[in-house]
Image 1 (cartoon, rainbow, N blue to C red):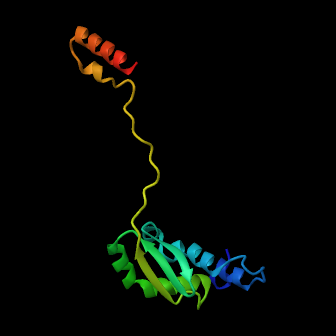
Image 2 (cartoon, rainbow, N blue to C red):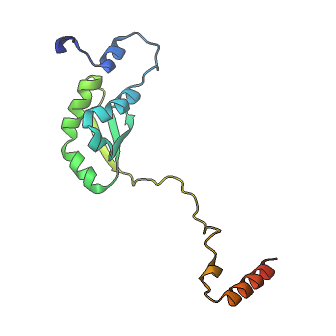
Image 3 (tube, one colour):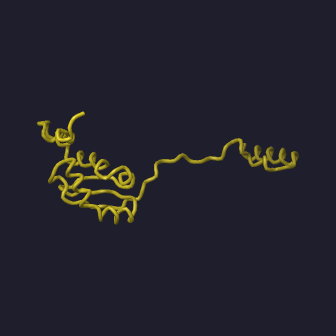
Length: 137
């Protein structure tokens, strides 16, 4: 096992490498560091959306999360600084963005759930089915 004094965050190592310009943008590094900086529980309710200059925009699911995270913004900023280095994020803004529902399939009545099966009298049921078939033809 390596001593913790020799361990360095991957984002700092990447920052020191002479990689081509635009390989890793500060925004990509900050957004990638978000979950590690705030933890799984907070990351499930808030996500780093974009970095505007040194201003991090975070989308939260409701006003309660917005208020709670606003109180913690300095601690969160320090945690992000530990991950990606200083001067990248100077302020954090929390915006309420309601959770979007993904696409859903339309729910159609199953073919086996025929409304005619609700008719108890077999003769009337047969007449109903015949008239319905004639109407739909």
